[in-house]
Image (tube, rainbow, N blue to C red; front, side, top):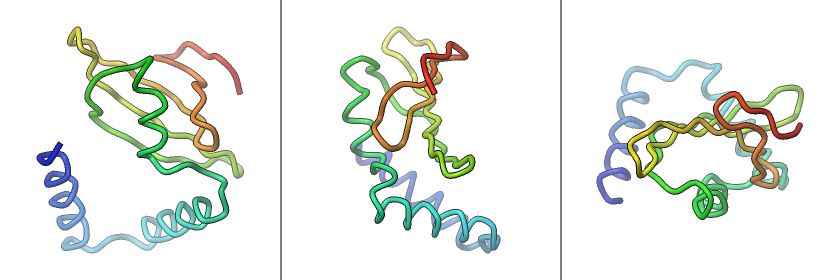
Amino acid sequence: MAWRKLLLTCLTAAALATGAHADDRRDHEMARRAMAAGDILPLRVVLERIRPQYPGDVLEVELESDQGYWVYKVKMLAPNGGVRKLLIDAKDASLIAERGKKYRR
């Protein structure tokens, strides 16, 4: 877990060193406001809720908003070595789709 934190820190530092674009700063600020307003759950909480059904290592996460509807796109390495792609509702951590299989929206 410590190596993940270190990797995230290094990636963040690299992004800041290369000069974050205005769009990236605006996206981050929108996400912060959405979290403060209770519109989205923190990633930590979302991962805690999905891990019982979807164990594995997180490879990549994206937070996206489409007309005020927030989703986490989570790519995970499953224990069997396969890659799992999940689309998670950022408000309640419910599964919307798994690798193209749509559940709800």
